[in-house]
Image (cartoon, rainbow, N blue to C red; front, side, top):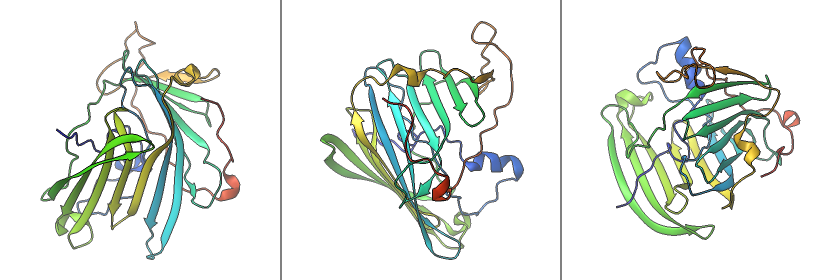
Amino acid sequence: MMRILPAAVLLSACVIAAAAQQATKEPAQAGRPPALLLIPVTLPPIAGAPLSATALVDYRQIMPDGSTALSRFVTRVARDSRGRTYGEVRWRTPLTHPGVGRLVQARIYDPKSCIRTLYYPGARTAVRQIVPEQRPQANASSPKGSVVKVEDLGSKTIDNLAVKGTRRTTVIPAAASGTGAPVTVVDEYWYSEDLHTNLLQVHTDPRTGTRTAILADIKRADPNPAFFKLPPGYRATNLIGFGSSLGAGAIGGSGGRFVPYPIPYILPSAEVPGDITGAW
């Protein structure tokens, strides 16, 4: 049976997009068009399938005046043989810019301890939480009254890896679309059973545009162990995560409410560094 794995796998449930902050400022309003969110690319924490890759996420965004803005989000992702994962959030840059955006946040997850570490190079701070592994669900949530159709796209190869394709088409009713008319949203996933993740995902929404995410430069070996450790010189805070306390016997035990770091939008080209620091 084909596994239908939504954005929770390649673009996982670790979403720290602006919507999280916005929810603390104003209540959600029914029928409002969705914002274009910057979603960190992560890998599922599965042992025995090490890899490192560059994640390329291209945005074709529809602006309020009807024009189209093109931008790119380039990050690194990694998973070691123990199932520990590493991912990044970087500034989006114009598609024509040759470099990559500044590192805003890095995240490490250890499935054995269930501890997630998020660190912020700009502030030299970090937070640690216990976050039980979130299993991806077969179907992504849809607004009430939506009609969902799932299609099998068959198989093909990407970078010499066999992948299986699935298309999920969601027709959102006018009352929930924010446009006054029905809206059709299409998600396409190409999943690698060998690597246990999506290699390609395309999300198309006429209200916001198209987001294409692909894993490139895949290396199937254990990455540099340093990527799974908090760098020296960071001030770390231990928080209560999703109802689970770290406890005095773990790494502290001080509680607190996690406030997501603000997600950046596009920087002018002059403000964007030209290369990624560190090596796999």
